[in-house]
Image (cartoon, rainbow, N blue to C red):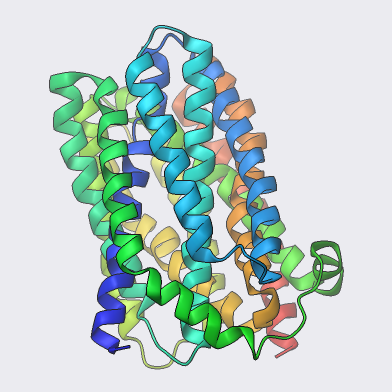
Length: 393
């Protein structure tokens, strides 16, 4: 397939996926509050969603690695169908039943998180087949899409309230499904090309037992993203405490995504990428970002502090996918990508459950400092895992 065409189609999938992710995550707290939930209840909902995502993502990854009838294409189509169904149900329900809204939104989060891992696996399949895709640029365009969507949502939620979100999410999922069917030949042809050369995949338990370095890295990621995703889920509390409103949430996310895009584009143009070093550096910037946010008192200051977001999350996102692609056997690549991706969900389960109540009880500054400490605890585990995995190459 033409390289330009392949890059364009894969980028289109990332652009639409991250537009969808913006609708799901940017206003999750405000949406559930509008349905009648407290910060503590929001935390419980998000926590359960993340533990379900961890379990279901790794189960689907194992099925994909076995190369039965489940491929990245079929998994993506199925997940999109579920997200459309859930979004339509939320649109009809609005705030009529807080418990049912929470359950539906919980599964919307689960299916969205799973889709991200499936698209990362598709990238690995494309590279294995001998084709090339600029993942960093495609993911960067996804961040730009996230930014634009966040800014638009900021205006729309002010005018129509947060209950407009399910309509937008369903529409984006429909567009994504259309693009996926157009690009389906990529998924199918890649699967055919690599299936004949694939080594026998290990079961999940054997895979984890044989790669302690990956387990250490996943543990570090769990700690770091326990803090990172909790900040994201309760960013509305931080911004409101600094004097912002719902529009400010969209605008701050716009700036965050632009910073991600800049770093990802720079990473994509690097000729000699030292994956272990770059991944370790990105991990170390996470606790610094949270500590900086804790010290700031205005929305303007928050914009400047988020420069550290580009050096942490913006760098981490492309480099971790490439690092796993280089260090984990292709036959187990689905499980490898899923483990590091879903490790973030595992950490988020614990922290969001606790911090929903902490944000109800303590100041945002206190909560952010505790989260910075949690992230700092994960850094040495992550670096130890990177060293062990690099040593086996």
